[in-house]
Length: 281
Ligand SMILES: [Zn+2]
Image (cartoon, rainbow, N blue to C red; front, side, top):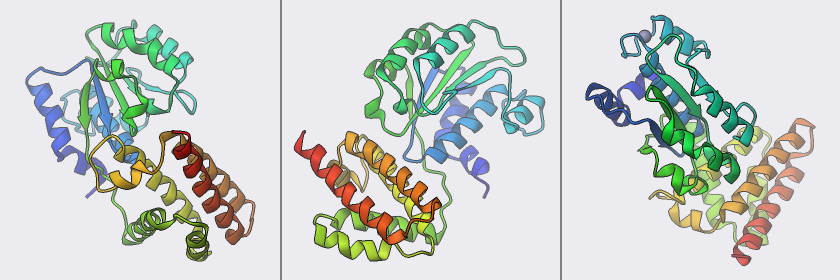
């Protein structure tokens, strides 16, 4: 089943159908999930629902087609750059005052507000609460701990399912990553894992999936999950540094650095960062 189709049939989307039917739409939704991909796809379905001329995600009306083509004049997507900044908040403050041009609603999407500064979040707070009636905020996050409680309290929280359709191979790599992180407690253990992790086939995939594993740990810190115990071993700050380490490793791989060397450095640094952050707690 295609992902959009899966979303439309999901429990969380049914809630939205019910809100709309009963005219109980909130002015702002705080949508959380462990998967960045699922958040993006869900927000797409949600905004399509809002601007579709029949509110059915028909796929053929002008509103639906514009969402499909990633441009609808009444749907504004933030951040404009990599992370949500004060400038994004300022742009939203200006734009909410402009009436929707083609649809009933004006939709403001803030992707991954957990990757933003406190200043940017503070700046947008009042607007979320006081925006004109037809404005609806769709705000997403993986790590809700990184979001001001004052933002969360002004929104309706919607915990959504993970809609990622992962292959058997993907699943195996993910299981391997979790197993590695659970057992990687000494330098001796790391040496064992370097060999397995650094195999040339699928190396890039392994790095990407390792990054996703840490996103799941961030999520597990705030929501009951089978990985909650492992998540406790990594401070949020440590995970932030680990994301940069993985980005560096990916760049080294593109530059043809030996995978064994990349893995060796990466795994030792992960262990170091984990240790340093837990010591400074
Ligand atoms: Zn439509």
